[in-house]
Image (tube, rainbow, N blue to C red; front, side, top):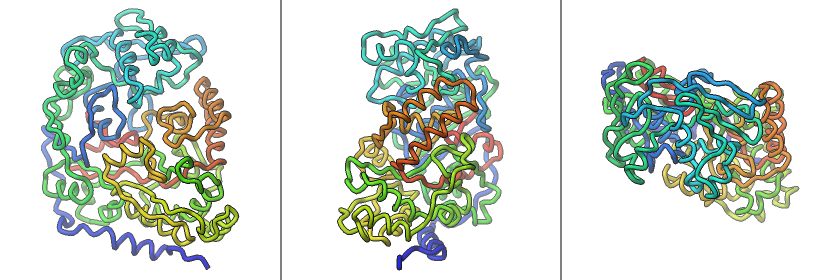
Length: 518
């Protein structure tokens, strides 16, 4: 007889851990001054350099100051930004962008085609710390020469005139307009040294840098003359509220106007009647999984062990009990809105089969498995306590390791954890953002070291395929290769849930990163 956590016990675990203590619920009301928007953040990023951005909080701050050639609206559609329109040539081996006229950087300079070239080349100057945007440049002619310091210029970029630029590739690149490259006044960067981003902003966005108190706040002010009209707010302040209950308290005490709710506090917040008028949500364009580093823990090299761990997770119960149903159960690795998984069987919950698989792998009731930790962020403590409990019920010797956010991100990128919570939010609306970035053998964001030559070949074909239906077919085949090997354990994806003091902020909530202030 296998001991498991029942749905009733799961609910009890949640309720026992979700007490908000002295902060209380709630006294917030829908009332705030649009002249100032105070956005609460859990902790501040280590850098606000748009050429090296690699974390979600930094992306949210920078999105208010910097723009790309294109942008993604809240429905996932590609819209014009610094480029007014664009078209492919040579069967997708060339993209021509027609740039917006009269756009001015925060530095006072007029934006022109040369700034696109300079930004792309600057993005490649530090390959040890690539930004989210770098994979989008890998097929540009001259990429390897610039990265390996054989040349300073990307020969695939041709400035036609001040407002027209061609990007040439080694092979067709159908999704290039999807990538968000934050365009920067590189002349300002060169003139102000390595800490230039603490002195000013060099973007074209609706807000420009004002002041930064590290660890406390960064203030932005409206960019007068923004090409897309007047920004909504005179000032936007990103303030460190500490996350979790302290962020809710900050909103409740009128110290913040917009906060995200940590995943394990969603149910308590949703069920609080006093917050109903302040509550907004949207699905995350994200994938979540538990990464299992096979080179650091021998039992993970056996697929039967990985499948057994997956079969101890009741994903439907997790979505309902931990996230009040405000979560999506994926049957694959790519969000269903980007790549339908309707024809794929749901990931099974079957403790009896899990126990049998462990025995077949040579670990009956976990015997012979060395103890290990599964690491996660504080906001997923309760969810991961359930996973650890379920695995322990079949003898797997696991303990829970809850790590502060900045430390978690630093150590997980270095591969210091054996098993950990791996999340990835889409930067653009295409399955390549999940499959290529996370699992391609040459991707700088492939943290688990998984490699498969057939997968890499399919991803290369998809990148060169302009027809979206044909590209989706290739993506499904590539995704199935990952699922067949099962190097990670897919998890449910909770919605973005936030509290805001004014409905005007509703337009800022986005599936792609959660927040875009305008």
